[in-house]
Image (cartoon, rainbow, N blue to C red; front, side, top):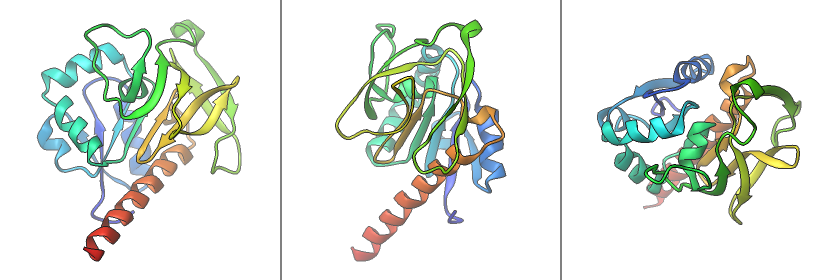
Length: 206
C-alpha cells in the first residue's frame, strides 16, 4: 500500500482488535479510532462487528457519527462487518427507532437474521476475486434482504448476499477477521489503493 495511506479501525466496541491484527499482518498502517481527531488522520475506515445499537449510541456520544458520515460522503473507503454492515446500510428493517445508520450502501438488512449466539455457524463461500473458497464465520449475523442497482454482490450464502460492494464501500454479514485467511481484508486494501490512486490522478490532472 502507499505509505501515505492509514487505515482506521473504529474502536468503540466490538471485535476491533482482531481487525487490527489482520491489517497489520498485511502491512497496513493502522490507527484505532475513538475520537474525531483519530479519524482525521485516517484515509479509510473499518467498522467491526459488535452490537449495532450500542455502537450507534457510542458514535453519538463520542461525536464521531457526523464526521464519519461526512468522510463517507466525500468518498472515504469503508468496510463494515456484521454490526458495521448494519450501520452502513441504507435500510435497517428491525432497528430501534433511535438507531442511526450512515446509509452509505443501498442495501436493506435484518438484524440477527441468522439466529442468536447459539446459532452461530461457519461455512465455505465463493468470493468474487478470490480463486479458492473463503471460510466464513457467522455470529448473530444480519441478513441482506435487498440490494440496490449500484451494489455488486461479491459472495452469497443460501441465495442471500453476504459480501457486497458499492463504490468505495464494502460490507460483510460475516466476520473475516476471525480466521487466518486475510484475503477479504486484502480485497478492501485493494479498494483503498484503487480509490487513493483515482484521487491522485484527479489531483494531478487538476
